[in-house]
Image (cartoon, rainbow, N blue to C red; front, side):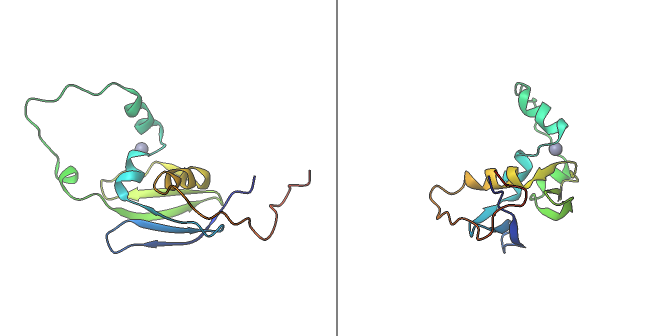
Amino acid sequence: MNQPVPQSIRRTDDGAIEIVWSDTARRTYTPRLLRDACPCANCREQRLEPAAPPPLLLVLRPEEVARLGIIGMNPVGQYAYAIEFTDGHSSGIYTLEYLRELGGSCESASLRIPPATPAEGNFR
Ligand SMILES: [Zn+2]
Protein backbone atom coordinates (compact mmCIF):
# COMPACT_ATOMS: atom_id res chain seq x y z
CA MET A 1 0.00 0.00 0.00
CA ASN A 2 1.30 3.41 -0.90
CA GLN A 3 1.36 5.76 2.01
CA PRO A 4 0.38 9.29 0.96
CA VAL A 5 2.74 11.94 2.28
CA PRO A 6 2.05 15.61 2.96
CA GLN A 7 2.88 17.85 0.04
CA SER A 8 2.17 20.99 1.99
CA ILE A 9 1.20 21.86 5.52
CA ARG A 10 -0.19 25.24 6.39
CA ARG A 11 -2.08 26.93 9.14
CA THR A 12 -5.54 28.15 8.23
CA ASP A 13 -6.91 31.51 9.34
CA ASP A 14 -8.89 29.90 12.16
CA GLY A 15 -5.86 28.11 13.62
CA ALA A 16 -6.45 24.69 12.11
CA ILE A 17 -3.84 22.81 10.10
CA GLU A 18 -4.42 22.05 6.47
CA ILE A 19 -2.49 19.23 4.86
CA VAL A 20 -2.45 18.57 1.15
CA TRP A 21 -1.49 14.94 0.61
CA SER A 22 0.46 13.45 -2.27
CA ASP A 23 -2.69 11.77 -3.56
CA THR A 24 -4.29 15.24 -3.89
CA ALA A 25 -6.53 14.84 -0.84
CA ARG A 26 -6.83 18.05 1.17
CA ARG A 27 -7.64 17.65 4.85
CA THR A 28 -8.18 20.13 7.64
CA TYR A 29 -7.31 19.29 11.23
CA THR A 30 -8.55 21.40 14.09
CA PRO A 31 -6.34 21.69 17.18
CA ARG A 32 -9.07 19.99 19.20
CA LEU A 33 -9.30 17.03 16.85
CA LEU A 34 -5.54 16.49 17.00
CA ARG A 35 -5.31 17.06 20.73
CA ASP A 36 -8.13 14.62 21.49
CA ALA A 37 -6.49 12.04 19.27
CA CYS A 38 -3.06 12.46 20.85
CA PRO A 39 -1.34 9.08 20.55
CA CYS A 40 1.06 9.46 23.50
CA ALA A 41 0.88 6.91 26.29
CA ASN A 42 -0.62 9.35 28.81
CA CYS A 43 -3.49 10.45 26.63
CA ARG A 44 -4.23 6.93 25.46
CA GLU A 45 -4.50 5.85 29.06
CA GLN A 46 -6.77 8.75 29.92
CA ARG A 47 -9.11 7.90 27.09
CA LEU A 48 -9.35 4.31 28.26
CA GLU A 49 -10.23 5.26 31.81
CA PRO A 50 -13.89 5.81 32.62
CA ALA A 51 -14.78 9.48 32.86
CA ALA A 52 -14.07 10.92 36.27
CA PRO A 53 -17.10 12.07 38.27
CA PRO A 54 -17.71 15.78 37.71
CA PRO A 55 -16.14 17.96 40.39
CA LEU A 56 -18.47 20.03 42.53
CA LEU A 57 -16.81 23.18 41.40
CA LEU A 58 -15.56 23.39 37.89
CA VAL A 59 -12.18 24.99 38.15
CA LEU A 60 -10.36 25.50 34.91
CA ARG A 61 -6.72 26.30 34.74
CA PRO A 62 -5.83 29.32 32.59
CA GLU A 63 -4.36 27.07 29.90
CA GLU A 64 -7.66 25.21 29.68
CA VAL A 65 -9.68 28.37 29.32
CA ALA A 66 -7.52 29.71 26.55
CA ARG A 67 -8.43 28.55 23.11
CA LEU A 68 -6.47 25.50 22.14
CA GLY A 69 -4.04 26.06 19.32
CA ILE A 70 -1.14 24.44 17.58
CA ILE A 71 2.27 25.97 18.10
CA GLY A 72 4.12 23.78 15.69
CA MET A 73 4.47 20.52 13.86
CA ASN A 74 7.98 19.14 13.97
CA PRO A 75 8.99 16.31 11.69
CA VAL A 76 10.13 13.17 13.50
CA GLY A 77 12.09 11.09 11.05
CA GLN A 78 10.40 10.88 7.70
CA TYR A 79 7.12 9.39 8.70
CA ALA A 80 5.81 11.25 11.72
CA TYR A 81 5.24 14.65 13.29
CA ALA A 82 5.41 15.78 16.86
CA ILE A 83 2.69 18.34 17.44
CA GLU A 84 3.12 21.04 20.05
CA PHE A 85 -0.08 22.50 21.47
CA THR A 86 -0.68 25.77 23.27
CA ASP A 87 -1.68 23.83 26.40
CA GLY A 88 1.96 22.79 26.71
CA HIS A 89 1.46 19.24 25.51
CA SER A 90 3.89 17.99 22.91
CA SER A 91 4.62 14.33 23.58
CA GLY A 92 2.33 12.86 20.96
CA ILE A 93 3.99 11.51 17.84
CA TYR A 94 1.58 11.46 14.93
CA THR A 95 2.56 9.10 12.16
CA LEU A 96 1.57 10.04 8.62
CA GLU A 97 -0.70 7.03 8.51
CA TYR A 98 -2.44 8.16 11.68
CA LEU A 99 -2.78 11.75 10.48
CA ARG A 100 -4.27 10.55 7.25
CA GLU A 101 -6.72 8.37 9.13
CA LEU A 102 -7.77 11.26 11.35
CA GLY A 103 -8.36 13.48 8.35
CA GLY A 104 -10.32 10.78 6.63
CA SER A 105 -13.00 10.98 9.27
CA CYS A 106 -13.77 14.63 8.42
CA GLU A 107 -14.43 13.97 4.77
CA SER A 108 -16.69 11.31 3.36
CA ALA A 109 -16.03 11.17 -0.34
CA SER A 110 -12.77 12.05 -1.95
CA LEU A 111 -11.28 11.49 -5.33
CA ARG A 112 -8.52 8.91 -5.09
CA ILE A 113 -5.83 9.30 -7.66
CA PRO A 114 -3.04 6.73 -7.50
CA PRO A 115 0.44 8.23 -7.14
CA ALA A 116 2.41 8.44 -10.37
CA THR A 117 5.34 6.48 -9.01
CA PRO A 118 5.13 3.21 -7.08
CA ALA A 119 6.51 3.12 -3.58
CA GLU A 120 10.11 2.05 -3.24
CA GLY A 121 10.70 -1.48 -2.14
CA ASN A 122 7.37 -2.71 -3.45
CA PHE A 123 8.69 -5.34 -5.85
CA ARG A 124 6.16 -8.10 -5.48
ZN1 LIG B 1 -0.74 13.13 24.72
